Length: 295
Image (cartoon, rainbow, N blue to C red; front, top):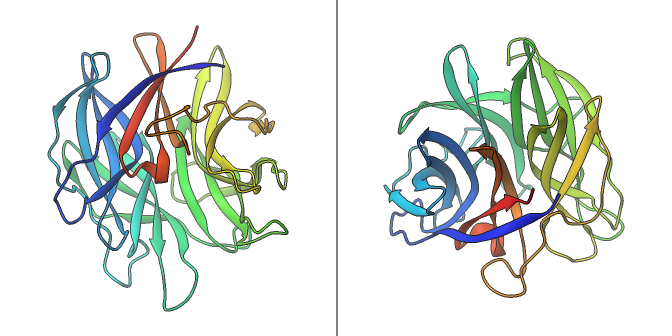
């Protein structure tokens, strides 16, 4: 699968104290015609992330509406999202729309830890988040970015889970796992969904999935462990198990806003075309871009 980069379509320029830098983890939701509401994570001066959005015509790439204000901020000090919210995808449940996210927390001098939460979204309003999945015997260390779908009466979740904060090459081991649920509350944890290879691909984040020609495809950020910054990878599944391809599916540009890093993909369809929103250098500090899948 090859992509045509269409350029950076949103550039950060914000004086709101919650959204001073970054437009990370872009997430598209169709409004009407060619207009999409793209939710994203901005950061404050302390690097804590909140949620905002911008409305963009995806064909002309013109910004229609840019409120430059958060719809949901990180939580109080004792909450599971006290140090930030990093969004995954959006899904429908009981005639309501929800966005899943990684909630960041730092307690004392300890390493940061993530849990998985969700919040209801209605128009430009977000309700208070609730915890969706915490640590367990299956996931002992930390959790990250969920992607949740409802297929054939079953909720399916792909998510990140830390095995170790370090390894023999100094890079963390953070893998992608799979879980199912009948009610999106109690989860049957299935374990690893994508294998990792030390020194090739061992730190994954923000899976995004799509069915194309009756086959399920997954894209994700990954780091190899050799010092290379994030690249975007792609895998195809067989019985919900994905085969690792340790080569970039979307690579960095020769120069510009994404010449060092590409990360945090979100794949969606519009008018029979497949698009990818993604971030560039420094985890989206300057904004996000758009790519289109070549036929």
